[in-house]
Image: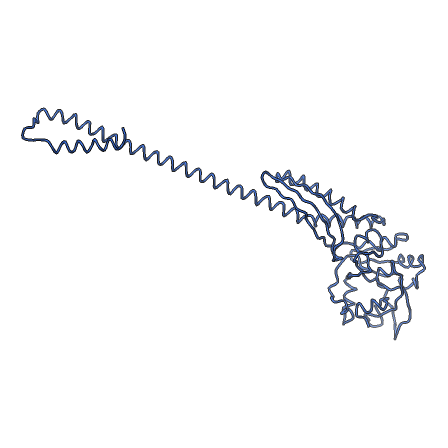
Length: 359
């Protein structure tokens, strides 16, 4: 029975009670009738409460279902957001690792070249192939750990505008479920902190030079190279020293090297300098003393001399590494620091004197 019908019957019974004529009423017989009518009223009343209870339970169940659906939808949104953030984080982390892995590859190649005194005849292709292998191992790692399918293709390894950096171009594609990523990633690899392989390759026919972690002691390797190539005054470079680790010079512009102790500090720290004539790092791995790329130069320093007084007229090959190992033009001895009777010297030509402010 519907709730409205029950309420209607209830009001009809109330109205019928109002219309009773109590004077002619048979209370004796009515007592029995009343009992029946009261039972009917109780039944109706019970039906009302039952209906209301059922309605309340129904509304409660509907509310629970709505709350559960909302909670599940919210959790799905949160889960999807977390998956998306995780996917993006992994891709971002992967892309940041490309220059790190590239530097590891280049460093290992430099170590091998130095150890074996054998040049890398195509350093760009070798570095490219080795980076590709490293990235393929990373693909397996991300697939197992994160369930992300990443594919890499190293397109090229090349010189940028800054000779202290090497550029790596890589296509990166990734997919996980509905998430996907595709981009050409340009990575910049710093060469600072790597070893300079060029001296070991240029002096490989008489490899008596040794390195001590930061410096190169040439012993008689450089003078041997100069004698073999018929260069001027090789004796001055016996037991010369040079820098091992690539470090960018902090003195910029370069002309301030001629002020105070700048040149002394530059030599002591083994700083490298930008040079249009010097060899870039990838060509240094190939044993080239000079190349057409924008490159680097560093000074090779003769042994200090005692009791130098006045102008020095002695000449030899200018001490910039690309001049000693490729261009072979002469320079004059210049004293850049003196303590007591010991003079620290460079052999330097006019163009380099102007470049570094040494008057």
